[in-house]
Structure formats: C-alpha cells, structure tokens
Image 1 (cartoon, protein in one colour):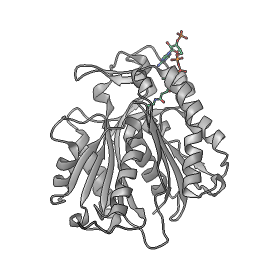
Image 2 (spheres, rainbow, N blue to C red):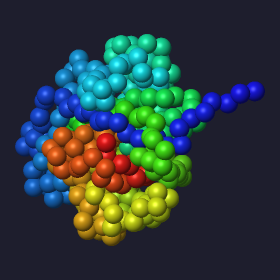
Image 3 (tube, rainbow, N blue to C red):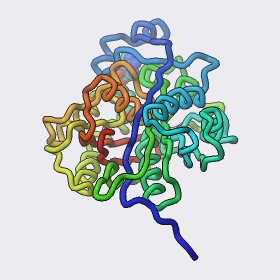
Image 4 (cartoon, helix red, strand yellow):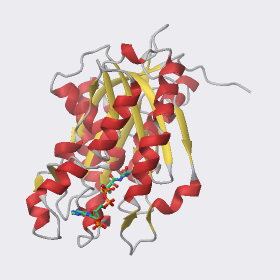
Amino acid sequence: MRIHDGSPGARILAFGEYQPAKVVTNDDLAGLVDTSDEWIRSRVGIASRRLAAPDETVADMAVAAAGKALAASGLPAGDIDLVIVATCTPETLIPNTAAVVATRLGIAAPGAYDLNAACAGFCYALAAASDAVRAGSARHVLVIGAEKLSQWVDWTDRSTCIIFADGAGAAVVGPAGAGEAGIGPVVWGSDGGMADKIYIKDRDSFIVQDGQAVFRWATTALHPVAARACEEAGVEPGELAAFVPHQANLRIIEALARRLGAPQAKVATDIVTAGNTSSASIPLALARMTGRGELASGDKALLIGFGAGVCYAAQVITIP
Ligand code: UT7
C-alpha cells in the first residue's frame, strides 16, 4: 500500500470576509426588547452588528467571503481540492453547505464537508485543513466560517438577541516551504458535561444560553489552553503580534488577554461592530485586521475559539 507524501507544514495564504449590509444598533434592539445601549456596551461590548437579509443564506455569505480569499491567494479555483465550511447554522442538513459553495465558486469536484464545533468551528476547521495538507490528502484547502445566527434567535429574548449576528470569514490554506510552519499545532478539547449551557434543541427551537455559566467557564478554563497553544508552537507570548479570540463578549476577550501576558499583542475587538458571529468571528476579525493594515505579513497571531459543546481550540498562525 502507498501513502501520500504531504508537506511538513501548512500555512495560510490569504483571508477574505463578508458582512451583510444591514447594520443593527443597540438602540434598534431597545425598540424590540427591554434593553439599552448602555447595558449592551458595558456588559457585552457590542455597539452594532450586521444581520443578513431574509433571503440571504449561509452559503451566500460563505461564497462572498471565500471568493475574496481565493482572489487574494492568487490561486485558480481549480487548485482547491478541499472545502471545509465551519457552521452551526447550515441552511439545510443535507446537502452540506461546502459542496454548494464550492460549485458556486467554480471549484470542480473538491472534497467538501461541513464541520460543527459551534464558535470553535473555524479553529477546528483550520486544524483539519492543516493536517490534510501535511498528510497529503489535500494541497490547497478553502476554510470558511459562516453563520446566520439571526435565523435561530428569539427576537423577544433580550439575553440572546443582543449578542448574536451574521457574517462569514475565510482562509486559503496551502503547503509551507521547508522549515516554515504557518499553522502551529492545535490544542483542542471539549466537555459534553456542559452541553446544556448553549443549545438549539431542534429545528423549531431558538438558541438558548446560560450566559453566566459560559462566561465563568470562558474566563477561568481557557487561558491555559491559549498558553499551551503558544508552548506547542514554540512561540513565547511576548512574540505574539496579535491575539484573536472568538468574539463572544468584550469582557471575556479582555480577561483572556490579561491572563495571556502579551501586553504588546494587538487584541481583536471586532465584536464592537460585528457582534458574535460564532465560527465566523475569528476569520472575520483576522481579515478585517489585516485589511486595515493592523497586522503585517509574518506576524504571529494566537487564535482561540470556544463555545457550545462545549468545544474549544487554539493555535498560533503566521499572517500571510
Ligand atoms: O459564543 C458562544 C460563547 N458564549 C459566550 O461566551 C457568552 C458568555 N456570556 C456572556 O457574554 C454574558 O453572560 C451575557 C452577555 C450573556 C449576559 O451578561 P451578564 O453580565 O452575565 O448578565 P446576567 O445574565 O447575569 O444578567 C444580569 C441582569 C439580569 O437582571 P437581574 O436578574 O439582575 O435583574 C438580566 O435579566 O441583566 C439582565 N439582562 C439584561 N438587561 C438589559 C439580561 N440581558 C439584558 C439585556 N438588557 N439585554
């Protein structure tokens, strides 16, 4: 039996992002539920978020973000041989989102699957893409995080409707040259004992979250995971140019950043204008930070995704 030769390392070649046009402010939400701009800004850190149009699908947003990533990578569509869509809000259970997105992008017959690790989805998918490139089962992988959470939110529930939002982010992953490692080892895990802390029970249900329990977990259990991802990558926190955690709550982001001990690292605060877009939040933040010139090629960034499951994953990447 033969096995494929892969690449010793994998790296990100380009990012892309998409945000829907509709901006929803905290004052808009205060017209729907008993809340205020002051409460949302001080407790969650969100000033506004984007919501998809009623007829705009997860696949539409994924195509928009991935199309930009593909164009920025300079690769022809035919060079992509695997498409992974991280989403917990797919339009349909079958077919999966990835195959549809691939066809719409003109990618002929790639491997294509959806991956659900909720808000950790992008980091899980990035790890799977990196491993596929390293093992030789794919050469170039399109990794997408895309969510339409607005479809699963109870717009009369003030504890959730002020948090969640829609959008997509994408990265093209390919082989790294000898001695070059653009995606560090993943440190990941889960705890099904906390399955009842964030869930959508069935297709006719809304998202339910025990906010305080998730907040406590995120601010007490995850900083060692972030530290281990740095250790595994052989990168000191002091060498990080950026820290890009899942954009769930500005207070969680700041608590994790304080514990990281990397005062020089730029901390992603995309939540302020993007809200919590689950598996889209990390690639969206990365694409927007690089687009604004806040991150330079070669910079090291630490990612950590966490959420329902509960599932979490962290890795260090090199900015393309
Ligand atoms: O992305 C997946 C991972 N998810 C997370 O990481 C989310 C983690 N949790 C959180 O971000 C926060 O727990 C929330 C933002 C969800 C809630 O913030 P909190 O500071 O934990 O609020 P709380 O649930 O403890 O509620 C405090 C008070 C309550 O009122 P009483 O009982 O003290 O009178 C709530 O009813 O705030 C009230 N409240 C609100 N008030 C105004 C809850 N939601 C709102 C609201 N506006 N939207």
